[in-house]
Image (cartoon, rainbow, N blue to C red; front, side, top):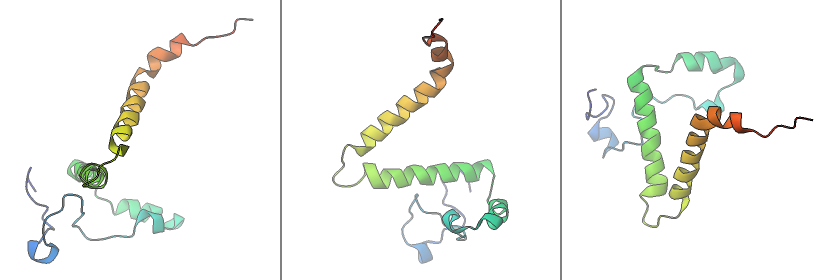
Length: 107
């Protein structure tokens, strides 16, 4: 699969119109239904290549887009989610500088 191509598992005759938020590979047991002794084998079945990781991030992005950004009546949720996400990100990257400015009791 090159950049901009459909996944090799996608078949328009079977799946209909392409949805970037859907995984077209072989379905597996959802993580919420995996028992504790099966977690290792479940993780071993995952595709851990960089392209698979980017594909998972892309599907998550499109699912978020379809649920919060692209409906007919968009609320304030996507804006607050981006606001909280960016605040958390900048707090994490600046934590090393902020921890030196704590107020300590010296007595």
